[in-house]
Image (cartoon, rainbow, N blue to C red; front, side):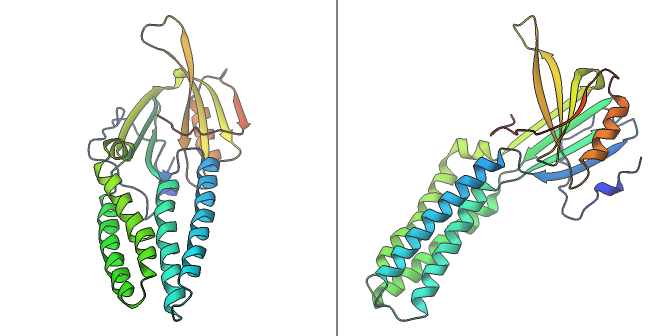
Length: 254
C-alpha cells in the first residue's frame, strides 16, 4: 500500500539515531506527524485562564498609563498582551514528533522532541529589547516603570527559569522507541475525539508474574485514523476487538 498520503511539507524528519527494526521488510504504512500528546482539554483550560489573567493585568497597565498620549498607551499594552500570550501558548500548545511504521512483522513507533533553543534566544533578546524600550519611555513618564516590571521583568524571570531548570529541559527533550509484535495487542480502538488509534497491549513487568494492560496512542494525520486502523486490522489476531471509543490521552504519555 502506498504511503504517499502521509507526505506533507511540514512533517518532521526522522531522528538520525532511529533505525527501524524491520527495515528489511516493506512498509505497509509509514508516516511522521506532530501532535499534542497530552490532555488538550486541560491544557486549553490553562491557556484560557492565563489569557484572562493577562487581560486583567493589561487592563491595569492601561489604567496606570492614563496620562500617556495615544497611540503609545494602546500600543504598549497591546505589545505586552501579545508577547505574554505567545509565551503562554508555547507552554500549553507544545507538540511532539511521532513516527510510525507498519510492516508484516509488527508495529514500530517512535516519539521524540528536541529542546527548542530558539525559544530561549528569542525570549532573551525580546526581554532585553523591551526592557530598553520601557526604560526609555520611563524617562518620559515614570508610570512606565510599572510596565517594565510586569513585561520585561516577567520575561526575564521566565528566561532565567527555562535556562537553569534541568527538569524543564528534560521535559522538553525526549526520545522513545517501541517495537511491538501484532500478537502483543489485545484491543484496537478508533478514537472518536482525537486523530488517534488506541492500541491496548499486555506486558509482564519486572518483578511481577502477571500481565498488565497498557495503552499506546498512535497519532495519525487528519482524516487518516480509519485507514490506519483498517491496515492494522489486517495483521491483528482475529479475536482482537475492533471498536470506536472516546480516548482519554493522559497528561503524560511516558
